[in-house]
Image 1 (cartoon, rainbow, N blue to C red):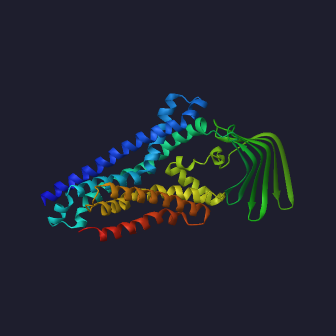
Image 2 (image 1 turned 45 degrees about the vertical axis):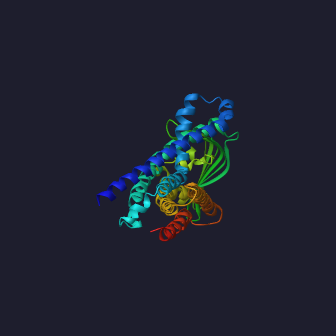
Image 3 (image 1 turned 135 degrees about the vertical axis):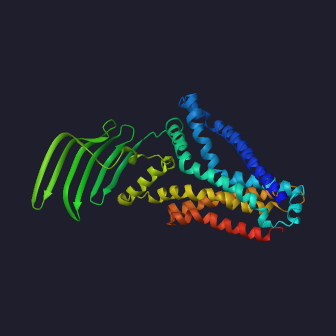
Length: 361
């Protein structure tokens, strides 16, 4: 039993050590390729070196390491397991009376550690680092030449509806604004103004050249004024037009946005739910791909570790590609977001269980 415990620690250290080493290699390669691709943008938009290092790459590295963690994990597992098999280290373990399931025990511990770390990063750290990266990209890499959202319809609550002809995200100013309040199908009031501007100090909206029409049965009142402060359940970020804003929301912001979207119905619910579910489900890849990796690479084959490593890289890319396909089916094909997020893990998890059953005993 003592020998098995020593082997457990040996495998755990090999697993996590190879995983960290592979992650470092990927980090260096990604940074080199990204600098060669983005250097012209940095120079063109005169990005400060301090912002490139402490904002862009402080967000870039966690984002892509998190995205590629299934590939990195799979390669690490196959690499050191195939090496153990090639050096005939696995056969004595199984010959000593340990079952293949027992042999998987240290792999489960290691993948659990990676799962917990990845989950914590997804929920609490990655959104903040994404915000740094996104803010930098939206200014110095891919700034919007036209940062105006047109013809926005929004439901603030079950009785209030907003329309803005166009909203300038740079100035935080909207034009041709109207707010209608209903009681069922009966119009109670309608506010119209030429301009609505966000006051970032008082956190209120300022209406300019406004009119307020109030309906009370057959009676109507009209009030006209030059300027008026008002509080509305909307913020300038509701009109942001960048594609990457959801990944930079923390869990509280994401939850608030989902609750508001249930009322507003602006067509963004699928995007929001996909982002939420991915943060919880994506880390499960640590278990799924570890199961597949051990099963594929625990048999000694001619030619060393090249064949298992090649198969592993192919399957890990297939897993990542499958995630993208399921996401597109959710966005464009009507597939429920929770199903789209779980499908890759279910399918590849079933493949992993099959490979464990067929693995050498």
